[in-house]
Image (tube, rainbow, N blue to C red):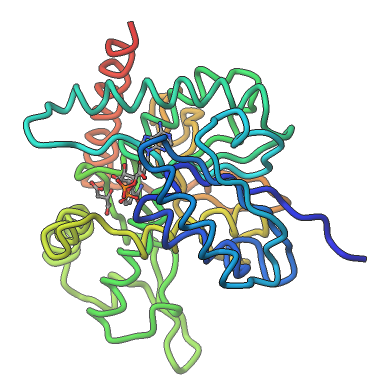
Length: 333
Ligand code: NAD
Ligand code: LMR
């Protein structure tokens, strides 16, 4: 029997990430090669013409899985009936703007879009926030959409997770697909903690070895590796004069695909999710944890040992998120 199409919302669809993301969704990268999709694309009126151009290109690409396209500047039309919402739209930082000004613009957008999703999305809609500040935008969305289960609201730290895998793969000269179980803890910001203490590599002999043992250079793993992953977004902006787009779009697909279809046995991924106090991370923050997914639900991996070095880093990024939360609320009051 033919599968019913899944409705996927992409906000900010006329932007850079949107332009990389919508063809991936239409090709089956998000939900697999047999799942038809209907794309809902939202942007703001100044981008309406450009958004329509993206719609024209989607038609021209004749994607077999793409069963329809809604391109709109109306948030209610965009949110109606969606099963998955990928929130990329946001206000970029401009010259002369303070952090608080950017935060203020974005949390207002996420408060408004929370209400539209709550009222008009399909029951059990899964939400991924990509736009920065991703964790705090997701938290605001959660707080202002109280009828959406908190388990359904997440933010993107899979890009940081993939960046960590990439750095280890380059350093050890092994295929990236053979590296697993790195962790991104905390905020999608430069305080995030990329942790390799539980990461492993599958060698060509089939044997699995720990990354720490193979790298055999704690100074690099506790220093340059961490700062390279933390600063990778800034390095991309410096090189491209634009922020990461293809890697962000690809990571967004990885995040949703694993959430919906499940993580491979013995492998975890990083997702920004609502903290329940695991690992003594304050409850009530959207914080990146190691998770496994099954039957469309994520669970935080429990029982990992946290040494003193890691503890400080988990706490530092939690402190930043607590401050961001307070700042976001002060912007809304
Ligand atoms: P962009 O400026 O190219 O695109 C953003 C789009 O959002 C624009 O088309 C804009 O018109 C639209 N927009 C603005 N306000 C909107 C609203 N209220 N509703 C709907 N659309 C709206 O930016 P981009 O490069 O695509 O990046 C998008 C966001 O993703 C930025 O906040 C960026 O910092 C963030 N980002 C996050 C990650 C991550 O890993 N979490 C990685 C890369 C980028
Ligand atoms: C990234 O990690 O590439 C982005 O979040 C950077 C940014 O500030 O847009």
